[in-house]
Image 1: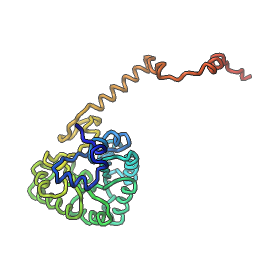
Image 2: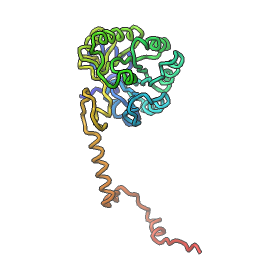
Image 3: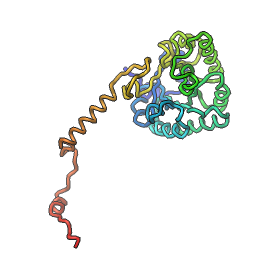
Image 4: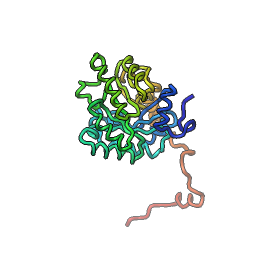
Length: 290
């Protein structure tokens, strides 16, 4: 049976997440970019992420770098209006937490004012100052290590991270530094399963894996990927649970056929004039403009 935060525990909070980590209960997180996806996912998953992946998934960009704070605000507000039972996390987009403490706090605080419960930001040791600044302002922070999409140019593409010994050790160090700085959870993306397992067993906060094996405290996938709504080749770590793209195209094709065949709309799908007005309409003739 699917877990429903709304019926079993009320709204999911950060203390709820921490308790589930201690209980060994696996966390489930997916993305939502608008009210429709939020209403689909929120009653079922534990955490909703308004991800900067909206750039790839919904806006047609090749990566997440063009996504702005204004874009994130737009999508976050749409999701927040549904009052999701799941914990609502908003991604800090590129350049929103890189320039100054003041900008970082202002941008993250704006997300909380728009309904987010927490923010997520990418990076390790170089982002500790910003993490501490946010936590000092009572803004909960989820970390993100490994394959960090905002660093795609530095990484030379979307490649598995942490495969060399020094890189693996650095990631473990960064994970513990983020925990010490106050992060309540860390996403581990695109790293070897053994490395993710070691991070998970040595941290006290939850880890949420995506392409990081099965030993993490929880898992996250992009909603459009797991529902089969994206075209083309998907990453190795994605398991698709429906052919959403094909199903929706098939439904649309059936409607087009009904329209062209004259069977849509039917009488049941049409409004009727009351008898008192029917005669006036049927007897009406256009007036002579001359």
